[in-house]
Image 1: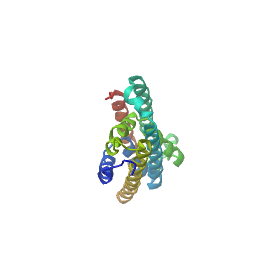
Image 2: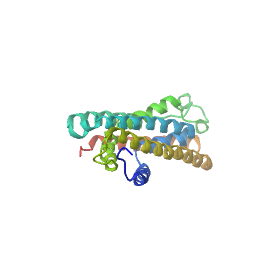
Image 3: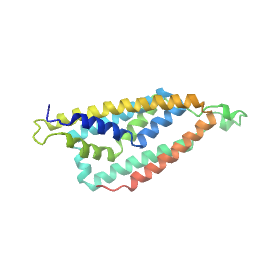
Image 4: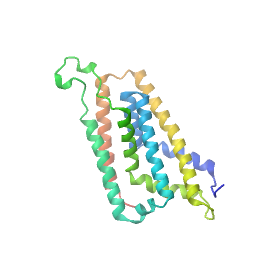
Length: 216
C-alpha cells in the first residue's frame, strides 16, 4: 500500500533504534527516577510531538534542506546543542528544597520538581532541535518506500507515524520501568538530587557532541 514494503523489518529496525541511548532516553529516565512515571510519560509525549514535527517536515521536503545546506544544518545544530547544554546546566544546579534555608534535614527534602507541561516542553525541544533526528528520517524511512510509489509523502508520513507509535510504547515502558526500579531501590532524596546532577553532566556532554558533529 502506497509503495511501502518490508513493513515488518521496518518495525523491528525502528524498535532496535529506539534502544540506542541518547538525550531522549536520558530525559525520560531522569524525570521518571526523580518525579515518577507520570513525569517520564510527560517527557515521552513531548518527544513524540517533536518526532512528528520531523516526520512531517521530512515528508514535505523541509528536512532535505538540512542535508544539503551546511548553513541551515549548522544553525539548527547550534540551537539544539545550546538547549541541551542549557538543560544540563539546569540539572547540575538542582538543589534540595530548603537548601538555602539551612534546614537540618536536607536529605529528607526532595529536589524541586518541574510541572508536567514544562517537562513536556523539555522533551519536545530536546527532540525537535536535534538535526540528527531530521537526517535520520531522511536516510532511514525512504529505504522502505518503493521508487514507483504513487504518493511518497503519504507513505513517508504513515511510516513515520508507525515509527513514532512504536517509539512511544518503548518510551512509556521505559518511564514505567525506571519509576518502578527507583521505587524498589527506594532512592533517597539526596541520591535523587545527585542522579539529577549526573544526568545533567551527561546532557552537557551530549550537547557538546552535537555541537561538534559534522554534516554527512
